[in-house]
Length: 210
Image 1 (cartoon, helix red, strand yellow):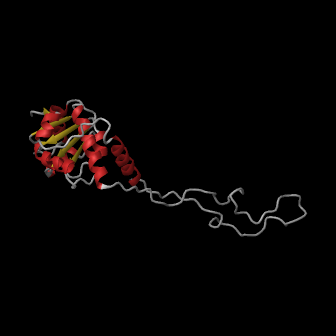
Image 2: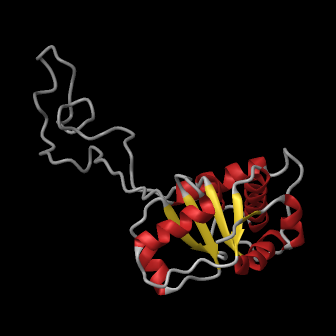
Image 3: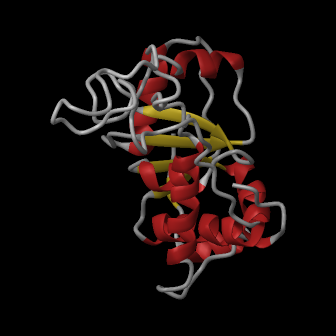
């Protein structure tokens, strides 16, 4: 299977808008990746305050005459088994990034991978027998010995999905769902020819949402 390296001129010919300024879009990429990682956090860590821990509320000893500091109960944070002061509580870590920034980050990440020669295009990638061995063989032909490979297309057949699901070094993504973080994470990006128009639209219009 013939694979062609997608260079800048070929990308422009395909309608992909590249970010040619080296500094432009770097902060946008940072913002988008941080937001994506933050949005995956569950924020479910929880500790009990002094009002929530189990306790009687009775004074541990009398107010005066013991020579010790007065105590109102056994639940304050400085007591063993007491509540936690300023501990984590359930919260949302979600960050919002506007559409323009997401589109710029996607274009910048794709531009960087194209410029470093990590993106190749192939006419098609289809596994008819649904076997992982067949998928790995085709992937080696187009991506070489890359440790992590991202395959982007408009869609995949069920046999191709079944063949790829047990191969953890590769990920199949549709052109309208692939995101900035994935473009940066994988060593090699294989783009099928039918995905180029969708990627071009995501870099040049308001359709970009990742």
